[in-house]
Image (cartoon, rainbow, N blue to C red; front, side):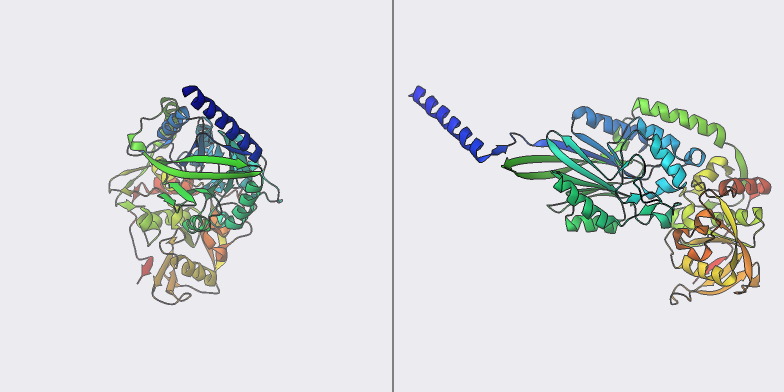
Length: 502
């Protein structure tokens, strides 16, 4: 009886295999396990308060790669700027560090363009990892050298179509206007369709985009997985069809998206089932990778020799926290604005509060160093003095104060303005004085501003100067601020009522 049972079973197996062959059905015995490791918005090369930085990020990525051959490490943009070191080398150190931990996919963020087209292309030419960005074109309309619109990767027999897009409003918020940035959603729709037509089992969009764009992709199910940067959020989401993740900033946290993929094929028809799981690494719990830490320490030693030099003493406290410099007059904004105006013999100075970046406070009596100045002003901005009518200057103030809470909010010198925040748009600025005299709409004033602003950055088109190019030979903002601090010796900046918001 046993023999007959075995024989019957064997015949059944043969018959089943024959039928499966005839029907063309092949089903994976086991799901394929993939892992996407995401980082984004990494500006600091080392940890801050025991969390984040490249050594801890490297430890996470290396551990994941040693655990599985099916790991795809993605960087969703923003790393060349702003940082202390980038003020010296325009982001070269970050490319070098990431070359030692090469991402499988790198998508540029808007801060990759802070130093202009020439520097951006140079840095990407130094990268030993794929740069993927489908909505970016060079000034002549071509795909930039070494760039890819998409990648098709294969892991465990699964075809993974990856597309990348950068922030499509980059020309407004960063330093390049000569390169072309197409709209994000239409680009992703086109590229996702092409990847599926090319046989992708899973389509992944690595994007640098605002929250609304990520939500639109999630709700529209244009792709399977969205790996996002730009918002500095720790965020995961899944609606049963599309998954989305973002990893905060500076590698404080790292998100891993584990995906089990099951593939079945019948004839020419290939069906794919997948489901995600999310893991969040708090890098405060991660031991830094020794090799990456050693590389970072070399850069930090170079920095210390250059930066730990005093330039002045504070007679009063300063506050550069984001909410302050983007929401009202600040002592530090007054100090920087005065340096711009005085060092360049201008009538007034106006610049965007978002260019002040350290997000910290200083107590009275503190010694201000080169390091502090460059931490506050990491973008490498230059000062442009341009001729502006009183009418245009008032328009700039009106535009700036309407953006309270945003990076465009103005910090000023030589100006005293009264603002009614409840007034209708276009009439919020009630009165303006220039160095004690009423503003004359017809008069031309010498305005010291940033090259970024003079190119219409942050939407300040009324201050645009056609002579202000990315490669302007004007003086560096940070250098003028340091020179002004040394001239003063004791820095006694205070809030004086330059912007009186009611």
